[in-house]
Amino acid sequence: MSKSFDVVVIGAGPGGYIAAIRAAQLGFNTACIDDWKNAAGGPAPGGTCTNVGCIPSKALLQSSENYDHAAHHFADHGIGVKGLAIDVARMIARKDAVVKQNNDGILYLFKKNKVAFFHGRGSFVSAGDKGYEIAIDGAEPQTVTAMHVIVATGSSARALPGVAFDEERVVSNDGALRIGAVPKRLGVVGSGVIGLEMGSVWRRLGADVTVLEALPTFLGAVDEGVAKEAMKLFTKQGLKIQLGVKIDAVKSGKQGVAVSYTDAKGEAQTLAVDRLIVSIGRVPNTEGLNAHGVGLKLDERGAIVVDDECRTNLANVWAVGDVVRGPMLAHKAEEEGVAVAERIAGQHGHVNFNTIPWVIYTAPEIAWVGQTEQQLKAEGRAYRAGQFPFVANGRARAIGDTSGFVKFLADAKTDEILGVHIIGPLASELIAEAVVAMEFKASSEDIARICHAHPSLGEAMKEAALAVDKRTLNF
Ligand code: FAD
Ligand code: NAI
View 1: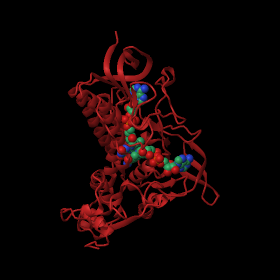
View 2: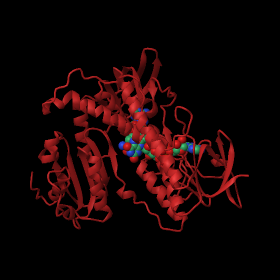
View 3: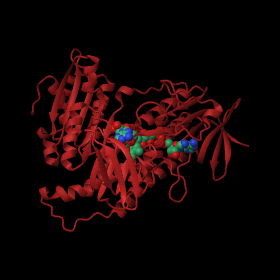
View 4: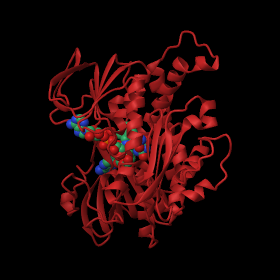
């Protein structure tokens, strides 16, 4: 007989596992099904984020940044390093250990919250009086029934047409996170978030990295001033970024990978590399769910169609995270997971899309929340901008990282903060203040009048807020 649950979540990425925990906290008898396998074939909950996304990429970014500091910056502090070397196998093993800690942590959280975990692939069988029947294609195939289903099956890397990932030479984010030795020449297709983060990892370790981007603008979704600064800094670091290219063919062989492309001037070019990372966006995971069998509506991209509250077209079936519309970010998936569990409980869960922060974990980091200057201009909104450079911040000088700036955008009349854009040290942490401020509908004057610890990078936030009213104190 199949076990029955109040709530069954399909997928244990950040959207799914958090939804399951919140549903259990709210008193629902909850199960979570996930098919990710570790190297030994065992369960590895956490989805893309934990296994081949946020967590392992940040582990490698940290390792490579440490190496970069030892190679290029320690000398400034009077620290001499002889015989500096990178042991890539050790670095990858450390990353794998970090991933495992997170997998184990989620299994522990399931136990603690009494979430039943099933390892295998879940698919809809039928809808009936007792809810939905879901088959689990695990080591022991079984079915469960659920009054409510939350689909959180995530996304996978998009391949170039006709160029399959072999994860050896032509790699997705998966292969890019387990390259066994520093490639001499690395190609990256797509100068988005993955391309820049993974390109940075291998460049810092010594690879000659060329990034080929289809669009004529660099980081089009990012505030123009920040994108311009980023292009300048990344180019200075040695990333070769070519914009406006069209990939014509990719040939992979024993000697490496040859990428034929047409450059922005319309001239045919070839790039020969040892490895090629293809990071041109991601596609929702809906194959194998039997969505059509139960009439679950998908859009033309294969994403599950949901309303503003993550309801699908089927009663009591919800979907969250990368498998639905909106930014493909772990924290967006988590917020949607919590909101859906609360809606099932009759509460009023809410996700504010305008205050979802974005971070690109390059060095310097890039982080933003709210609207960009180009968006405000296109809307015809009257605004005031205030900018403060890290070069004028005492803590940044002490740390030895003075690149970049903080920019505040505020409504010209009401002074409400409309957007905050940071490129600089620890932007990922600094942006939290802006998110809180915007959630509370703060004005730039509010931030300008708040006492910030000295010396801290946070003072650059206060100074940029002061700059909106043209009264910076340290610049
Ligand atoms: P996923 O994390 O993709 O999880 C879905 C899970 O469901 C997977 O385990 C999958 O195997 C499983 N599944 C799929 N179908 C089934 C099925 N039928 N039955 C059972 N299980 C199934 N975001 C950030 O916010 N910050 C970052 O720093 C960041 N870095 C990233 C770096 C990289 C290299 C990549 C690729 C992504 C990164 N992201 C980052 C994006 C982030 O990983 C995703 O937005 C997030 O994982 C989405 O969560 P999810 O729960 O929707 O799906
Ligand atoms: P992306 O959407 O960030 O960037 C893809 C880039 O590839 C774009 O600039 C696009 O114009 C370009 N492109 C598309 N087709 C192309 C082609 N044929 N040739 C050349 N260029 C082409 O996608 P990416 O980097 O794959 O990452 C996927 C998603 O994962 C991100 O959008 C983000 O949501 C998430 N992510 C988030 C991170 C973070 O929060 N720090 C880190 C990594 C990923």
